[in-house]
Image (cartoon, rainbow, N blue to C red; front, side, top):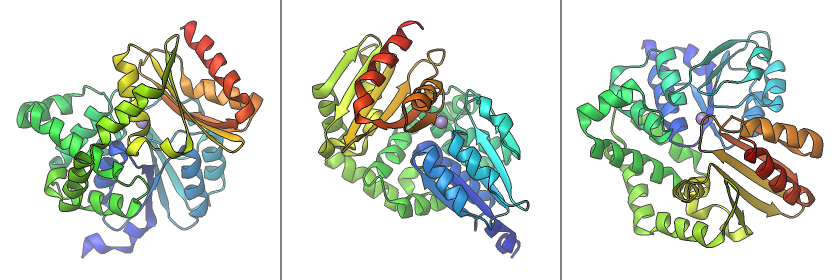
Amino acid sequence: MDSLSRDDRDKHLITRGNVDGLVSAAVFLSKHPLSRVSFVTSPRAGAVELSKDRTSREIYLVDIALVPDVLRAAEGCRETQMVHAIDHHPSSALEELKGVKVVEEGMSAAGVLFHHLEGSPHLKKLVAIADQMEYCETQLLHDMLRKHGMQKMDEEAKVLDFSWRLDIEDDEFRLAAARNLADGSWPSQVPSIKRRYIQVVNERRWPKAVARVKAGLEIKGDVAILACRDKNRSLYGFGTRALVDVAYRRGCKYAMMLHERKDTCCVSLRGMKREGLDVGNFVEGFTAVHGMEGGGHPTAAGARIPVMMEHRFMDEFVSASFTR
Ligand SMILES: [Mn+2]
């Protein structure tokens, strides 16, 4: 019963709730079946999970940007705890983190974790799905496309991506799904994943989300901007993915989604061009001056700002993006 050693419970994975995060969790659980897994929607939420954990000996942050909150939470860890930062985005804050740091660009975060943990070959197809969803043309993806065919890979990526969007808050589902995927199944072979996928398709959520984006989209320079009213918040679960899809087709290089909630405005930013403006840096700089908080990766970031600052944020981002 080696795999049931208590050592397993000493490990904690903190990652995102998207396909890259789900595959990361499957890779991790395949190595450490009894470990804890937390799915988070933002680096800040990751910092909260990290600061609540004072017992795990090894904590893996996978695809979590090292924003100040995260660094602070890591500093609060006990001497006996080791933080591993595994990412596919470079970060200047990396030096400030004590612990194990592995950053590899050009592949999914799940891919970085897979190589780092020397994951089992039966998970290659899943990691390839994560690479594909993250627009990374890796050798592994190439090999899996050759082995299984483009259509199969596309279908399976879509099944997994649609499934978690049925109920974006349902982390129980994510954990169960990752456990099932850990033994090497295709997403469509896992009944709970397949069922959710079919429901999302039947409810026509993707075309509805795209239509809603198209109806509300505003384009300024290279930036596609969508301001959501409260009830539209999640765009049927497709959120920034639907916005990025429409923005990309219209030739935009950046996408910005805003939702106002009372006197706070939540902003999500995406960059569709790798060599463009670093949106994480931009957000960090803006929120350092105007409050309240924000940060992220070069191509994906988020912030909470006072509603009064919304227009200023838009204008400053649009002009910053012009110069690039
Ligand atoms: Mn990422």
